[in-house]
Length: 264
Image 1 (spheres, rainbow, N blue to C red):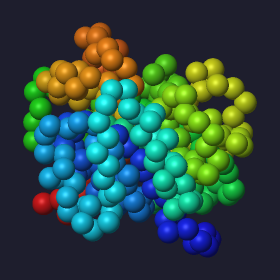
Image 2: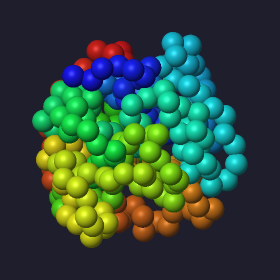
Image 3: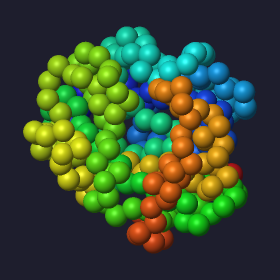
């Protein structure tokens, strides 16, 4: 059992731009699964981001930072680590279209505690496609999109991490900070190869990546630009990520039911 010596066991750091319509679902989902604090960096949003976040800011669930500029993702992550590395045992780094899904445990902390002592864990994507949706419709993201790639698809080699932030040395990408220590994969095995060079593993935990949603939402995402690069995504990005081989996966159904209780 974890003996609390720090204010939080698990926190998440994220940078967002004009994603206000998705924030409540993303926060409530991860709160439901054991995340205790969110550090959200607002990169020049011109939508309702601040209004959506305000109740969470007032309740101290979210720490909000206005973070303008171009290519600010890694700078935001570094700032978050510098400010909060002594406030949390573990910190995850996610985008707002990524949802951590424990498969064999009730919560994310339950899963992390099952690993024993570790420096950082790499969690593979499962990319979700559009399911043929052209327009944005009502409903949660996790409710509207249930078709996804085969777990072995090449895109799912991508990982995001949950790490001991005191061990982070630097960020050279949004996917895997350099740490003082060794990473394990999501099955708890020491990683000996780069994530591109080993098969994805997602039987214990995974990150559902709703990269495109409907085609309308993809075009909106494309117009926002990218957090690390000046160039926009090409239109071929939609085709590459529109992976729908596994149909109507029910894995999120229980979370949808619970979310509807939390978000009327």
